[in-house]
Image 1 (cartoon, rainbow, N blue to C red):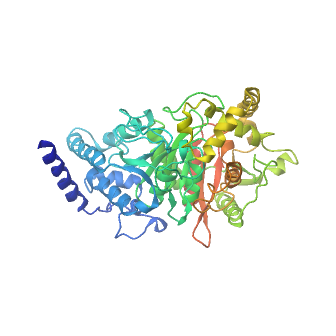
Image 2: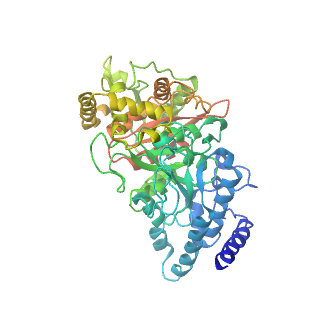
Image 3: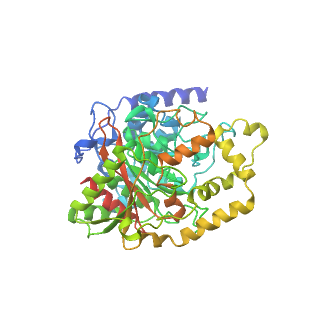
Length: 506
């Protein structure tokens, strides 16, 4: 009987909370391009920092913001942003945050509170490859049983400790392998700019949630473009930090350590807020971005290349809007006083990227699948592309895999050599518009993989080199799709990349 009464009490509380309309912070001055229909719950009407400040000043509560996110997620469920939502889990956490805030405000200054909890009250969600205590973990696959972790992964713990509130788990492709977020577990992640198209992957659900205004920011992870690809597809800023920059990530310098965690946000300022938390530093990136917006950046030498590391093995063709986006990016940077130069002016006929990159990367990308511990019955439930990767990895002689890894490790060890006289590099991001849902998976697995490479010809090489890179939206095509450029920096230049991205939008 007590359990029934408690359940009824919880339901009554949730109904009351859902009836509370969110209030836009009085301090908010949203940019016009980020302002949508104010009759709907939309976190794009103000920056993440402004929402966080509104919690601190009492304009809104953590419960209200969490309710806003849950309401929006439920209203826009057709977008497929989430594999799992847990209102009770999130609202309980939000209530705890409000109680704690009331206690701390009598003992801490606003500055101390902001330092202790820079994401206070902000709703967010981790992709369903990251363990979050109490929330189901599917890894985007029907081949393995769903588990419920008893504790957060280190990164999730860091973000939650900063005051963020997880409302659920976002959609991913199986094991995070493809660049589109479709699987057998839940509905596909649909692009808010055109719901018939993919949102990209593997942080596809997170990008959808931010682009649709369901969440203010989302943490992602990037092993071959998994932050930058969905950010580009959905018109967002996505930062892939350099290898080892995020303390909770694997710190190995091996080229096999491809994955790093990073932020996805509507604007660079919000990405900087989340990056500072993920990097476990004070408001360093935020300060650098704000200073750049106020006074500009010192002129930089920027090399531009359209050569893909997948060439000449694959024929890479850029859509007209991809070229236009690159031209727009060049113009934006030029107006801010940066020196732009095509890399061919310095390298001549020489190849810019490493030889045999295409075959070596495929070996590296699939190598660890050979150790995947699944029964034959479980393997029957794998996506065709995953089975193809698994069979390829098992069939490949170990000597060939070792040679590919060694060649790419040598390339990564000399990563700074590619910069030559430049401070950073700029490339297109996506070669074509995001394909329609089901387009990749309708192909034979071999063709599927090749077309993914053609769609994303500039992202994976940054993971191999271990360098930081940021996706910057710069152009909107006639059909409303967003097009971006990619800025690639040297080790330790994440803050500079975010500052540059912010000034390009200014």
